[in-house]
Image (cartoon, rainbow, N blue to C red):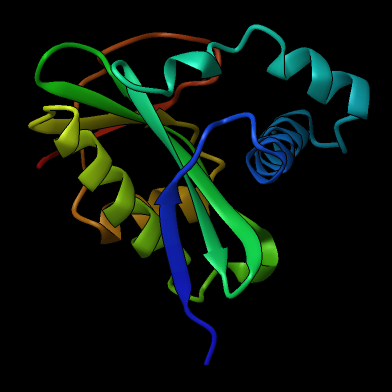
Length: 159
């Protein structure tokens, strides 16, 4: 049986970059209801602030299913006690294999190491798989802590 392993990794390694591209292509394509082009993915990733997902302001985690890089996510410290969960992604073919729960656990551990006592996140209503993962992992709906065009629902969890 193939297992998942999670580890902190720079956001710009080849595996992390490929996963970030897959993530953006999927969420943008779902939003636009058509496949995102490579140019649109490039534009979306340009200046997206991913560099803050490194100590001391954050962390980035890559998950591997066996040898295959198949999941990623980041945490960003919003203040001394609160971290934001961001860019959580599991490749579609690997969903349902336990990677989501393992990834969230690793990201929560990374947030604790940065001093966080609470994790928050925002997402869209159409990202049903993500919303299911969050609620199954103990996240509950909270009032909006930020605003933006791609935010429909907000979740939080005490760490």
